[in-house]
Length: 460
Image 1: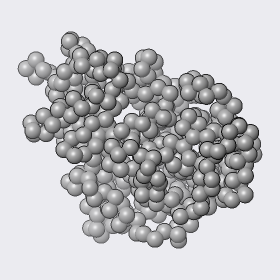
Image 2 (image 1 turned 135 degrees about the horizontal axis):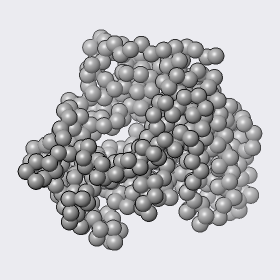
Image 3 (image 1 turned 180 degrees about the vertical axis):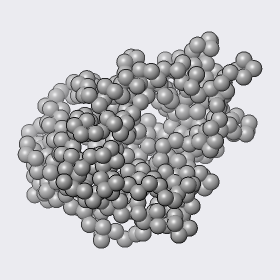
Image 4 (image 1 turned 180 degrees about the horizontal axis):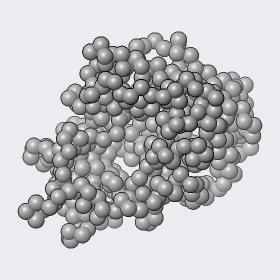
């Protein structure tokens, strides 16, 4: 385990905290963040992934491995446990913040704030922990390269995007370090760049009524979810009853006035769904609920939350015992505005997070990440991630470490390219295991061979 320098808790003034951050450069040079060497691994990639998925629903794992086999970025999205092990072996400053844990370009999106406005922010916290700020920055850096290649960009363009991302993170952290505590607590990013505008336009269409028409059908006067096996299907009644019953304990995790509003809704139907890549194999239920009128629907997601993939490498004392509470607390720490119905519950001894589903939600598309769109999106990602870390960590110390030069920007860009290339090799290892029958995947074989840009062989 790399040495962990003293944390800045004993430093009282902003000047002292910045100086502590600067002093950490003597132990962990900023240029050292470019470093990555697969030789330091003491595990087999495929074995680690299989072990990490051992507690998931076995019959759904072929879907997960099939999704990971499609592309290097698809693999990356499903391989948080692998990157967690890799990051844990790297030097780190010892400056902690609430990390998203799965920081990548698809985990930013638009959603409805409590006041009804559409906002753009980090929107996935399944892996959240208190941990090194560098881990989020490095994961996002690699994702910009992988997603950028998938969208058709060259490595030169991808590297420029990572530099822009870290520069934005660093400059935003400096601004946050100068804010009063209360101003930082209520700060919400309002600057909207071109790629984000298209996401917000899509989100405007995703109203509950729109989702009601899209996801359900009227049968005998009641709305029922449309089945789309194996991705969405109904459950035996005993399982549905357990899901509905869990809402009683969930309501106790809400503030009293929010629990009052939630009490106006009654369940109409329950469905199991498979979604994403990293979450496949976990139990994920959606409950359709109505208030007094058929025109007042709400969709509630009840999603299983195992321990974070970072848990083996970070302090357990900083984590709530209930994993749904961990996710809830992490999201609230990083966001200025969160879902009003965000909470947690348990079903048959398993932990779940509870939140609204598809309430004006939308994410980025490949076309938005082409050319300058990738750089613009990277800048927004840098500011958002910086805000989350500044809210929950020591912005002065982190800013003091980063400084005013581009040393860390360029180092993280180097890491992003190198780790993206490693991800291609790991993806190829998974595909070999599938071909040899060591790993079962749904429709695994022969996805289209990615272009040179997608696999990292073109670097102009």
